[in-house]
Image (cartoon, rainbow, N blue to C red; front, side, top):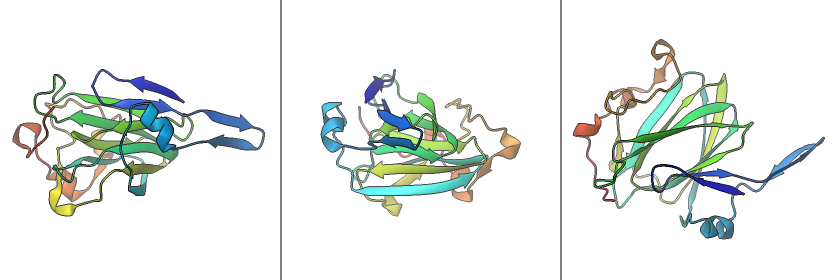
Length: 184
C-alpha cells in the first residue's frame, strides 16, 4: 500500500494495493499490523456504512474528547468529496481543511485522526460510504461545524441549490463559536 501524508499533520491518504484481472479485483481494506507500521495506530472498534444520493452533504461532525473518534474512510460505491477540518487548538493548520475525492473507482482511503471535524458530499448519483471508528458513537458528545461557514471556505463541489443537508447540520456552529476541546 502507498501512504501519502498531507500538508495537515495527521491526515493520511492510503492507496491500497489492488489486484485485478478479468474476474474483478481484490484489495486488503485493513490490516492492523500494516497500518500501524504506516503510523496509523488507531484501535478500530466500530464500522459504519451510509448510503446517500447526489448532493447530500453530511457533516462536519466531531465528538468532544474523551469521546473523539479517529476514522478510516472509504467509498465502496459511487464518488464523494471527503473533507477534514483541523480543530486542534494550537495547530499551525487550525481551521484549515483538506478535501479529497474518494470513489469506488480509485479505492483510496483517508485517515482522519481525533481532533478533526469530518464530512463529505456525494458527487455521484448515489454513494456508499464506509468508515471504521476507534471510539463508539456518543450522541451527547457530538458537535458539528456549519458546512458552509465562510471561514472554512470549503467548495463541496455541489451547487448549493442542489445540496441536501439535514436539519441538524443546518443548525451547526460556526468555527469561531464552536465548542472544541482538542489541543495540538
